[in-house]
Image 1 (spheres, rainbow, N blue to C red):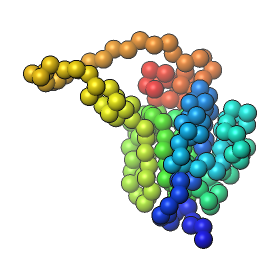
Image 2 (cartoon, helix red, strand yellow; image 1 turned 180 degrees about the vertical axis):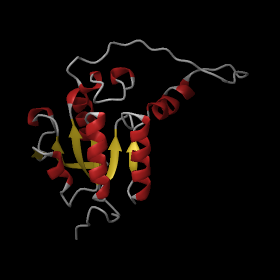
Image 3 (cartoon, helix red, strand yellow; image 1 turned 30 degrees about the vertical axis):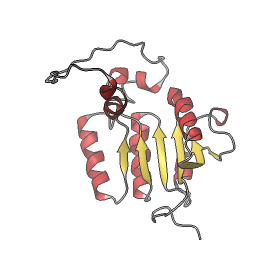
Length: 179
């Protein structure tokens, strides 16, 4: 007997939909393809050839979100697109995992958090800091007496291509620097 997308499930992989675009498509598709804990049932946002093989492709992400077999959605589009799609997905009872940032500005972030708190679903925005503390921070060899009080990290890296969504201020909270 199949469970509805908003009911708990006791076994098997998590049934997910994948919506991605731009430079984030390939890494996210590779991660989903390699993970045995998720079962991708549909994908949208990217060109069909850029997505996962043997997974249904949808022209419209909203059509993918309406599939009753999904339990969660993975989002990696523009910030504006992720906010809108995540809201739609959470209201339909789907759990949401997104790439950062949370929103384009502080007011929108406050709205996203307030909306997510009202719903019984999980709304997760990936955190770079959690990855660093889990995989890098503890592996560094600190002197026994070292106790950090303030840390500052300056990073220089090439920005995204001009046509990629993180380079567009209207799509992100200030463009590539905010991402």
